Length: 355
Image 1: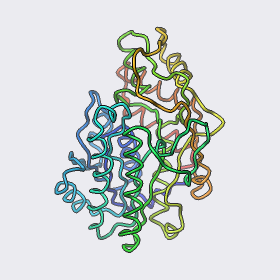
Image 2: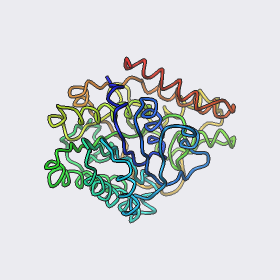
Image 3: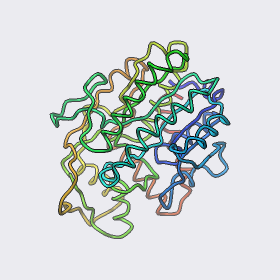
């Protein structure tokens, strides 16, 4: 269980706080009383979740690029963090095919820059780098990957995240161990929740189809992914960081998976149908035409190590996650106060974990 007293005493440097997951994480950290300094590119979608959730919040926001070394170093120095969570990335698979060099720059060089800047933070205790469930060498066998399985990426995005894992491993052994700072990676993906408007993602595509009165176009309807509500992995990130910064941090695994229950896989088609029913989207779906970049059909993670080492458990079923997500977008469509709805969903989730 999370310790609110711990977070209320922390200065948190959070990269990527303007993104979908980052906005939810920053919102929760602010509610926990943490002193949060966010560093990220300005939001690129309209609307954007950061602007919805954070007006008047305690999160200090700096718009900057993790490839801008002087600006990044200045932001870290001003924050003087006790813990850091690095989420800034180019997170889209299909964009990585269009922009491979930019993807590797953001995800590899950007991570190196963040770790370099944080080396100069005198009060730092722990750093968590968020990678992805797609870092594993996937042969489409349906095997649920555990943390010691071989890493390997088929596409530029996943490959860049594998390289990011190698950068973290290098810095842990070469620098951070001698500093007495715990450094680890967290692996999760395929999250859903209110406020995601990214390109080429299933839930935003469904929402856009509803807005336009169009049928949904699916690229891989039978593909299975570890779908989970954003609050499940985010709770894992918080708990992992908290434990890394504590007295037993050195004994924790250096990487952990955060995934939904293994007995509840959902295909892209199933997610589409659950979401469409909740949104009253009756136009149906059709298969995308033409060439589509290669994506693995099966992806599952084994999160038993996170359960055993942290006591973390996924709290939502896949269906629950989709329903909560649909309810958020319905409220947005009705011009309701989605910031208040986000707060209620967070409060309900905190009840699930006994907080």
